[in-house]
Length: 231
Image 1 (cartoon, rainbow, N blue to C red):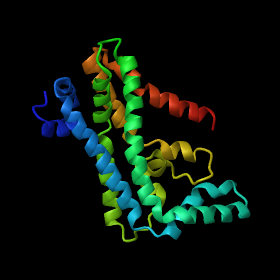
Image 2: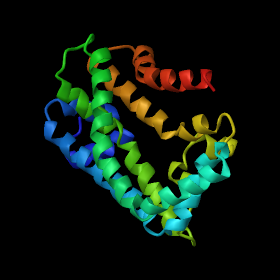
Image 3: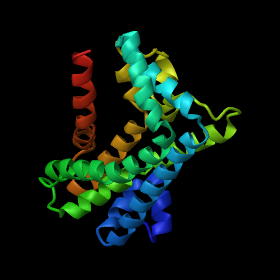
């Protein structure tokens, strides 16, 4: 078992079962984890955009969307995007602050639905599991901040924010290619989070390792499986 929250912040990466064993009696720990998750992600995304020029941001946004647009539509979009480009960092920070708890709440609901057949637990426990299982995202964001710091040019491609995607690591597809959106959004950090869900379900619900892994991976399989079918 994790003896304190500091050890818990380490155990989630190296010994997650020990942390999950401790969480039922240490509900306050999860509020700190949630705060760290939101703050690090917010600072990281702001830092990513902070050095970029508004013109660069607009051109990068157009590069992602303009392949199906007419020249007139491109110019209209450029004008609209230009009005908001200098606020992109602040808007992104606000989105992180709002969407992080919402996404965790949805994950917690799923975990409760599949996990409570093994052992009844309140929704707050499953929200704690969802929060801690997303902590690899902190390392992901710290990695992005390191990339920005090491870059000689602050005007980085916007897809750098998703530097652990299958597309950037393996495929190298360009915007407009049929599998680009799928591959760009499939981030390897999701596999780590799925593994933590599996450890949590195995620990709390008493499921076999296979069943825990299947239930943990099911949302990822459904989302990206259906997406692949309709490409």
